[in-house]
Image 1 (cartoon, rainbow, N blue to C red):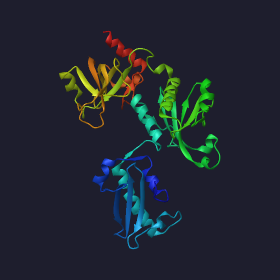
Image 2: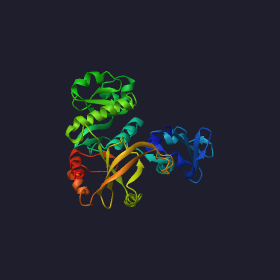
Image 3: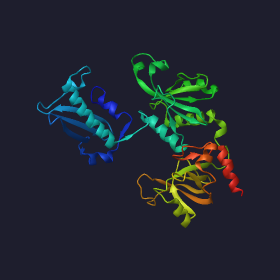
Length: 358
């Protein structure tokens, strides 16, 4: 991003361009991407914003009379009411573009955001911010225990020196087996843990030095080490929870007509797994239990939505009374924040399996 004084980067940090929103907002397609222009301060200046096809953003403010870039805007110590007016008008344009044309992301780095997406998809674990004084620190927990702590840090804090030491990166602290520490520290991007036990934790720089595959293996292992007794079964089918919002999809009517339906493929759900369907507000209850008959099926136009690529076929095997597994009972069984697909806890699995034997 280029825009001087950090103004552009501050506005578009943790933002991703939604290209389908650019033209409706007023951008014009160009040879290198998209361009937007808007006059400010009665036409005395013009804000020009460019977005390349790969999502890079640049901007500048032009003096309309001189047809030159207004560089005073970017001078760090430039002050005065006039410069302030220009800067305020410029920021207003940037903020409107960010608000109307971007998706807000939880983190800055691409790999960090991919990791957040994988955690949400696989387990549905919510992100939390454990330190009021350090709101940029984010953690993921299982059974109330951290298994991933994500935060920004300068590389000098990880023991690096020279020019690169001043570079700020996002890292994740993960729990590991003490016997694996030496081997892990020999890999690019993995360092002795910052501010946690170096005997059982490591810090991983989230800049693609370590592949997503290797990173995911370590995150999965960290989660199992953090709370090994809460992760359900080591053998047999997995038990999942997925939410259904009645405002968008009438699952009750669907199951009243068909006991076997096709549903958007979720997480790593496999054939023979069990899926519990949690009805969101206002019901807030686990209402249906299904068996997965097929997984990773081609959509083939069955669900008319561009984001739905794969389907799974599920069969209804139990419908629970809404008083059986309401949100209050699920919370007692270790389940809360059902915003995406997640595995059932061991305690909930035991209760659900009891119903299969009724």
